[in-house]
Length: 314
Image 1 (tube, rainbow, N blue to C red):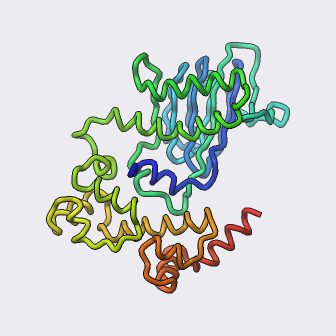
Image 2: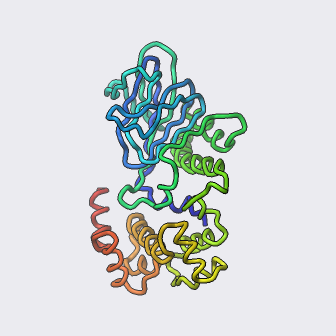
Image 3: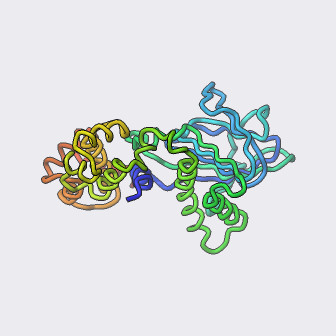
């Protein structure tokens, strides 16, 4: 079971939104906060990523070059510009083109050109998976020969599809953008020395905790106990509970309940399974017990939760 993929999939609320930005110096683009994580890929040219004007300096000024990738974990407001001194603007309707497979923004003057793929991954901000908080607020992956070949290949494929859309581009581009998030996080994880790993990042490769997380995620409906999970870990009950809590930040059964509720919410969002079937798949012996646990976590009954989603999407 791929815990990174599962955890991120549990937070997805929609497909990524993206736009190609073409700027000619002088140009500056003000980007508001987004409900999720933001990303930028420099297709060609150079630019700067700058903190927002409201004083939020969570992101330091960073010079970006061709092939550079930036991931902004919390979707904070920020600015992209050809130069730190260029005043940023919000694109007008005339500067935005509703092209396929993604939109396009053109702005600036007649100087040096830069082209970027900008966008955001729609992630649940109400119940984010705790693993995400263990990644940095900003990940900058400069393009260097031989570094992260899979990520570089994805960027090159995206650039080619956006430069010359052809048959199949409408399916290829969204899939590449969707995969980009995993390539970015995997590339960052690959750069971390094992001795520096802490919390969830360490848990992903810990010989005792990682197989337990995989088992929980693969079969949340199993009647897991601390003892049975300790057996999966190959540790004593006390040693396992202590190690799991230290790395994950909560006891094993507390995380199991969190994951069961996350899966239940996804099943309610994605299909029309009877509530009794959702209960069974998430480890509850009765619809009543499931409904009580779900309401405790989400503040409303599962049937109400599903109806509200259907109403919101219609």
